[in-house]
Length: 385
Image (cartoon, rainbow, N blue to C red):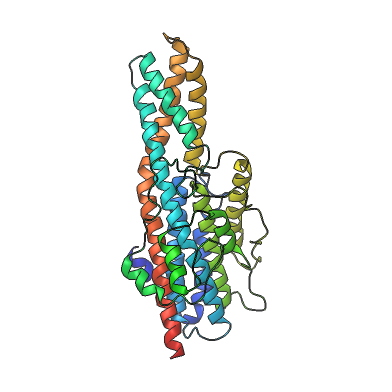
């Protein structure tokens, strides 16, 4: 993260930091609102969302340090509650990274299709056969998530990477001693702080569900009553809402073991009060994700990412054409195939260019959450000494 971000709130009167933070959040998420962004749930939009989250988290960290001591009720409870939610999001970061890897695997088959059919040369029967097979393989791979490792099917397509982690060993070992409260909803094991944090950091269990993890993060996420919008409780609530909606958007965009039997449409996140200027922007993102989720709920659930949907559409149309063509190809059929392949190549290039930077951002989100949590809990512990 650029060094400038850590200084973005310098020069403010400490008493004005909460108000400044809320204004900043409103400005960041205004441009991400579906009404202001035609590319919602695309790779560029998702990258912008993670940038906004990282900037918000950094300013939130600065604000908490400036608001010390934090060990006074009810602030100590609210801070601990936020970081309980944040710890749950670490599994989601790992799942998103694995989803990105799965999309990379799909791209290898997309390249077979493009390589077989693109170019100025007439399409022969052999290249068409190779492309048709790759399209069929992709259709099966993108059908659902039962082939993911840990699903019990044992038929994964090389996704043997579930035990990799974003966490730096030093950061994890340093943070484990600070995790006091157990968190739920992620299928993690172990009742002690150390064991539970290890499970959330290094792997997910076979019956782990991203959907249930998201529900756990959003549970009881309500605006505080009887306090000023510029008070610290309102700031903590704001960061919790940003955390939830950001994780919801990114996780559902990729194939992340989202359990279709667990609904995302519950009332666990209500519209923020009108006094929060960021509320309409953030809640409109939440509603957009639910709207897209409902459209896909009874279909294959390989992610809501716009580029994944475009790839599915083009492959479906291309497969329908390739299934019935006869050789030699008629001129209009060859033109139709070439146009579809051109679209597919364009989408694939966008995916290729966007996945690596996005994975680095997700890694940064993971590490920033761990670092922020460690720093703030250290501050809380010092206040108790």
